Length: 335
Image (cartoon, rainbow, N blue to C red):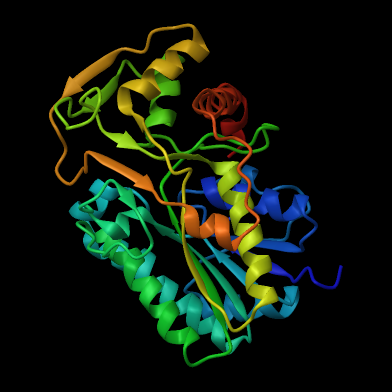
């Protein structure tokens, strides 16, 4: 269809990016992927999707991709995402997440790309004063990861003000789960996401799961987070792209979450139920910078997009993550 513009997905061999590729393909969009495969996997890119093994700060490569694919929209997922690592190696994060995003945005402007969807994060809010976070909640990151993403939001806003480009910054909460059809999932070894770690422990790939902090002012003392299924998140990106195309003078910033949360212990209990096993818990002290509770106010995205989450169920999220984790043992040798 004429309204389906060619889309370039950066980081499309990674966890969230690969699910966005699937969502775009399922909806009939022409898609190409660029990924340097530092944390992504070639097997995560579906057969038949044009794939470019390279870096988003390679201006010559980007110009070639834009010319070959007729790129008119970018979904930008490429970057580094481990918060503790960002504290230990801040310059890596300012390079990968900020400087490279600037290079990509510059290439997009030079190449006449009109629409840009950015993978942002609730980490830009830091430790908010209220557990339920609106888009207007002050952004005050407490780590380089959050700052690196916030700087890119700022670059997008400033660029869209003076160039023929509009953007959508989607601030993710805790992304989890895997493609229900088993086509993709979280494949990174040593991942730090709770549900990924917990299903690994259930399958004997880890000895236990660390619970950081049991004395928070929450119902059971452990941290509460808003977990969103990666497939619902990917669907939001496709709808956001449609919104940008429909109103090319409008840019958007929206939270991506379900608007309610689960504690660490509730998540582990759900893993126990789904697996019919007992995941060993290692109770530890709080980690610096972890808020007691972080839940999205998702009123804006629901009012702006026709977004109707399909997988807002903790056991469903865990079940899909578990299904992928079992499959991964057969797939990973192909990487």
